[in-house]
Length: 147
Image (cartoon, rainbow, N blue to C red):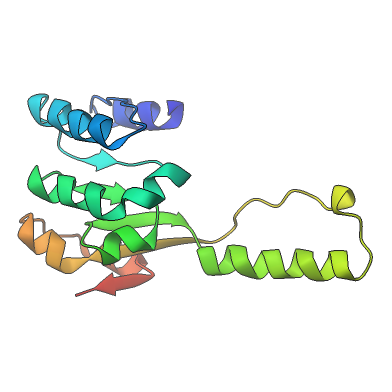
């Protein structure tokens, strides 16, 4: 959060931090954002939000708030963009660790591994619906573009 606030200051943008832990709080949070005339929203990676893909995408669409989500599934469901750790890469690493354990390594001796691959997914149809012309540089950096 601190890094996001620092980036906001560097761009002369005010950053608002909201918490939500159920559907009603998510709806209320979007209502507060609209009341504050926010220009964009970043939803953090939280396992709880993985159960609300359709709901969060629908709220972003309903309130016409350009939103970046943490997982590919959100962009596929109609979210503007997603940026987060690569699930296929995480599963690959899980397989490597399972193999090491099966070969005799003790789980407690294995190092904690952080994600090293992140995927940027852009939904052009949603960008068009929001009247957003994405810069070519962003499109070139995207790992996947949904049309």
